[in-house]
Length: 598
Ligand code: NDP
Image 1 (spheres, protein in one colour):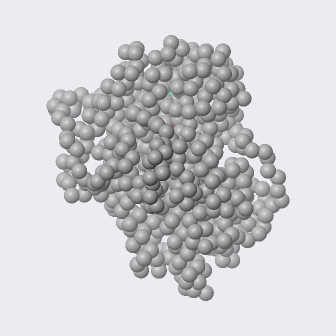
Image 2 (cartoon, helix red, strand yellow; image 1 turned 45 degrees about the horizontal axis):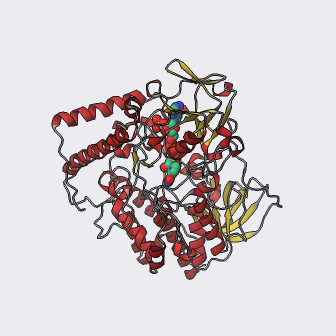
Image 3 (cartoon, helix red, strand yellow; image 1 turned 60 degrees about the vertical axis):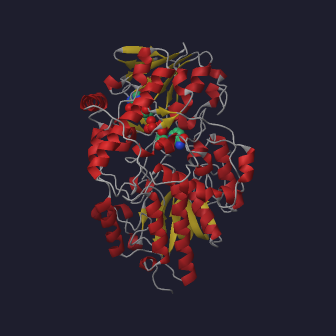
């Protein structure tokens, strides 16, 4: 790794910052940890139904296809597209929404954008023949790109929308996929990619049921109430006093719009986000026209290398993510520092982190006029403790006379609801509307939570096996006893900040393995128990020890709300993991999952 200059801090400064971080964490840790949240299963403006499309009616299906892909977000779309590229004919995506897009289908709140550069975030750009119009795409452009992938790879013809999968069962050499529409479809292969951002959560604030005003969750934005659309113009709020609970990546994008249009906005903050520079800009048409074949893969790999601290000749994306590479090591694993003394680097990383966070705190001070508000907006924790955010409009929103920041840190969040408002520090704030920007059950797929039961050979239940023996997969994709079933997502593999890239690499791997099975005439893809055990041992033994870091972090979903649990990731990082998969496929490794031809 190119060594960044290590900033100097005196021992006293280091001790002071550490103590401040510890004290700020203590203010926020709650004894109930992750149990403080409740599922948004209905009510408070949240509903599972699809507000964006006509209700689809159809007869239940009991037909047979080659592959069923669960989820029509980017993971599922990439899986289906990559399978199509490798010659698989009948591919069915089963999706809860009324169209493709996944989280970008459901989330249409004002200001919605992706904060990863669009030229590296959006998958299959060259295949679709598209160059995004903005460096950071708005949600609608992203959703339209998802639809374009569906059209390009002919995925609409067999897709089942507004359909939730309720059970997967291996039966006589194929999977039976049951759904909430009474389907019992059969498929040789199943790819599970139904996401980890689709179950919104609400804070379990006492009295929440008693509030008589209007409420909704950001993932079900109620434009009927607010007026306007994702670009703003929320005219319905002109006479409303609005509360937003939460200041994570979603709220950062929503707040400027509500601040502009509401009569009054109260932002209820427990932990401030770190807010770095955004600097969005339209795509330069000359640059777009100059792109040569292969540009997309090169740019994605360049970004992945840059954010993991690998040497890159030219930082193509060159934004606040890549500039933060030296302090991203607690979010993304990397082998870029393998040749350094671990303790020495740990110390250097902490100093770099102090310097980075000092700059972000100084930015707050520069931008926010009222010193007391600025003080409350300063993040006091290590950069990798919370999902970083990026905005050039969020902090300035607090300079409006109509916007008030309500700090809830000392009461562990909003204390309680009344019929007419919210209570913090014993004071009631009356509001007309409460918007929950309180996030999702991040990182938990329906398979892991048991919402989607999976029965393999002899009816064995996947979660029972994993409960008894621990979670066991080969490379996070396949499990012994569950043939031809592939998981995409964060499971015993290597995540990165550009998750759409991670998912596409996973999709490429699955498609290559399926193609090889078909080429060899092999009926089942299934790892041996030994191969699985070996992978789990490899990844567990090498997984970086972040428990001490998580234990010092302010609470959030990264550290299971302050009650740190081990995070198992491939220590050498995403690029090394992708290399390992390629070598495994082209070597003998693949024979471990491909049984006999029959
Ligand atoms: P988050 O979980 O990140 O944020 C939830 C917010 O609600 C936090 O600020 C939290 O405070 C606050 N909160 C929860 N309970 C209470 C309470 N009782 N009182 C006061 N505040 C409370 O959700 P987001 O929707 O912001 O983000 C969800 C996911 O979506 C993330 O993974 C994010 O990365 C992703 N995302 C990505 C975007 C992109 O551009 N790529 C854009 C938007 C979202 P505290 O921090 O103290 O817990």
